[in-house]
Length: 356
Image (cartoon, rainbow, N blue to C red; front, side, top):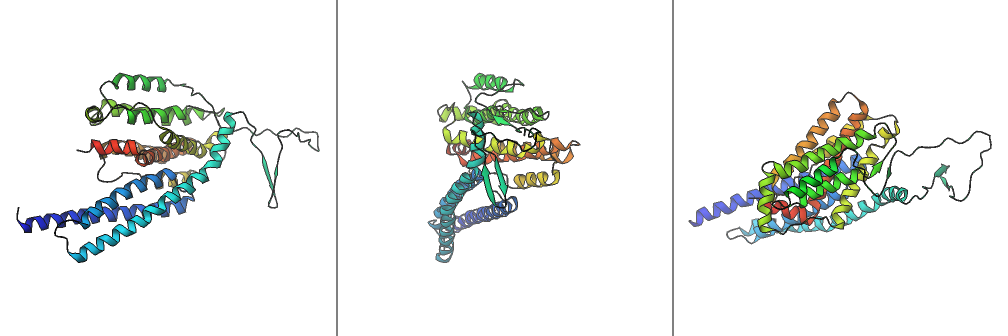
């Protein structure tokens, strides 16, 4: 190959890298704007962006040392790398703040696990009075105070009311001798987490079954359909079997599912539903879907994206308002679980190893 051909090839490579930077910039801008609109920062999305940012910065650093890069271009690339490093250092702090913001509602749900009484806060002219669990309030009139039914609660053991957990476990066990099962296990644990919630609402069946069947479909497609089945089989040749999630991976699933139930709370309470806002939130989540960097196997990610798109379409087309909200929240749940996959090193490494 001549020097001219070599230089041309390097410039083509530089163009690819700069296009990636443009894509990353647009992703970051969308994340910042959508977070402002929603008034909520998704820590899993922050972590997945951080993972992508780290890889992009390293790729750009490689470009600064490429043979034949003019000094002026090298200076610009070095400045880009510096800016990426600055953003990279800020994102973990943003993630920590987002996780801290989510901590309180999660603790309230966990308190129901232990049978602890949730403190009722009464706000009056900026002051807050907390009812003691040991002191019984005596009403001034003879009528008994109305009891507020909880929309949902979380328990220790999942209830496999539709048989989907057992079905999925058996499928994974069947394919585990020849397929790497960490990704299917991730979805199985999400399925189990959904089934750890209880509610007396007549809508509870749909709240559980609709997302559960989508997750089962994703898991089954990984193990039995192309390209997932072949990719998981090939992965077994180069990577030791991993059958369990670690605590960080489980925590992300728990947060995603807890957020889903917060989103469907009005449905379970049979309160007034703001369908338009819910669909807008789902559209925003879908627009910010996590595809990851160029080093990842996109065909498996596309399968999850298709499920998100279908759920969003169902949210827009369903005739029942409750189902519209449920499907909107499913869109957000699946998007959040995808961000959780990208935010964790093991699932992300697997998607990278699968890339041809």
